[in-house]
Length: 141
Image (cartoon, rainbow, N blue to C red; front, side, top):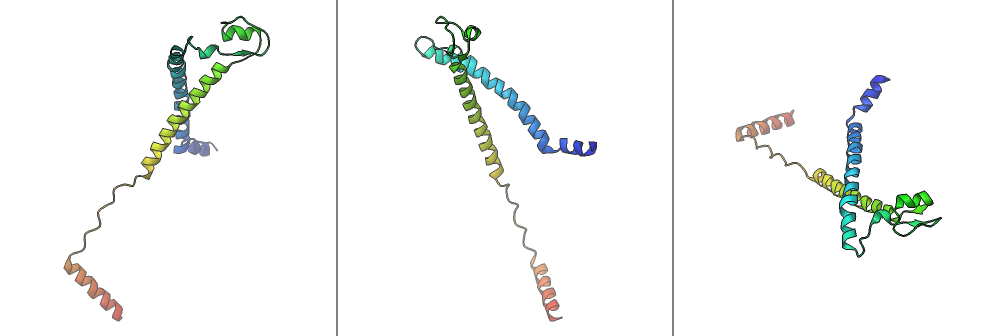
């Protein structure tokens, strides 16, 4: 049983999947950092009043003074965090687009056919003649 498990675990597909999951987790953190640290501040800078996605929420119960952070608002009561949802949607769209480009590139590489080998050279005339003689003798028998 241990031998069967080792064969399964060391197959190429399982190792490829493990590497993909690890790279995917690291890539997700990278995209999250890009969205939170680059895209959202640019959107905040470009909008009037400096829109901050991390603090866009609607209180479901209780009230808080305007300008209260989401963390403090959640201490008062449940809050519907629209800004976090928008950030997650942006993360998803970026990841989905990058994965689309990767799959498209892989499909293109798979579709390319390797260069065809040159056709074998025709045998010399004397070999062709001997082959014809052999075929005629075999046909007479």
